[in-house]
Length: 229
Image (cartoon, rainbow, N blue to C red; front, side, top):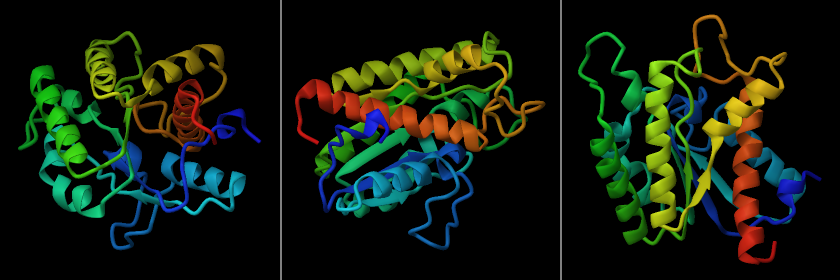
């Protein structure tokens, strides 16, 4: 068994909701509410089912491609609050920054201060709706050059998410930093879907890294808090 599965904090009856953009959606079928997509959410669900078949938890994916914090906030009632999750995982922010360089459209770049305001509203309304556990995943990477301007800007959004996690006593998942470290240690492995033109979207390997990073952060948080698996 993976070490990160030894201190699972979930209990039967929990509903785990994953929210975000295309990295979370991962080609999920919007016409099937139970569909988990082909990415890290589905991998997490599979690992949980295999490691603890006795643990009856419900995993939901409501990621939507292209979403910024603004779009996520606009659909928050229907796609989060009305679903009454026990656990809520959010990964958002890449598109807030990416719009700085993409062709003009109705979706604009969302400055950091506005991003934080939107994020706080997501968290405040979730807590008011009795969500018990929050998991905040760092926004990841945008361009192939990890030291590039956009990636440096995303780093500031990542720092803001980490600060929000501390303030709201949420679990922080340092996925961005983990991907950078993974790329340096295993430069022979390709974790991007299109490493020639896309510095953002994961292939299966990238989603596996995201899933293990998520589970490790959640279970480590549980272990440090002294909560029984």
